[in-house]
Length: 114
Image 1 (cartoon, rainbow, N blue to C red):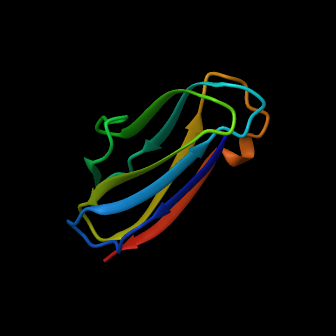
Image 2: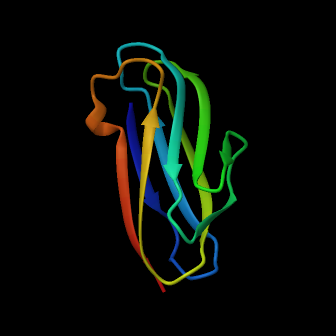
């Protein structure tokens, strides 16, 4: 898999903050049960996202089923920071199929909320 993950709007306390991620199957075959998983930092909550994404108190999971070789999914999610200060978010691209390029599967975004 390959993952890109980035902030798409200016971080402001109490406002919805946009994030974009792209998960792509760069493996040699089908990626079974491909998903994007994002642990939510303390003081950041789920606002909205596409139908593939669900949120618990501490984690967002976006499930895409089986992704064929070379196929990608490009999605936007929105989270709300409730306090000012630094945040670190690390998203992961996961599947039930072995992946020999694990270094591409995690991306970290550091940001400061004003």
